Image 1: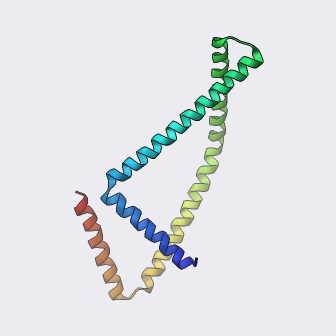
Image 2: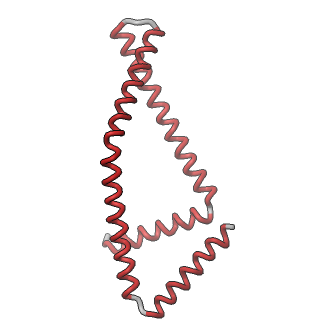
Image 3: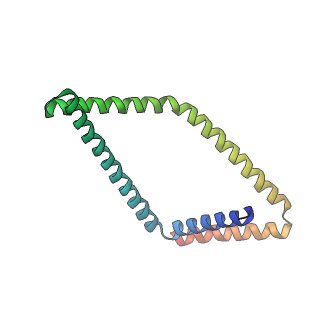
Length: 145
């Protein structure tokens, strides 16, 4: 697939996504809520699987009763969670700076592309673009009220 047809496909999908989001926000919200619910249920199942297996492992290794096993597993899971949070805390500044630089790079690139596109347009094309953009924005605001 050539890059031009690839870009046309991406822009078409982006336009359809924006169109659906503007005119059917309840369907989009319901879809995202359903996906979130499924992911949350999956995370809960994984958590329970890990907890049950840790219970069995601790009970087998240390030969403890139910209460002692639950206490050991609780503190073990809290320790693992704090280690993960500490790792994320250490990685946050680096990730923030990389993301900030990448977004700035993308912004400048898109700004240069838009500026070049605007400079290459004729006066009539500039007027058409301004009128169609203004009319489109008006329709979006008018139909969403």
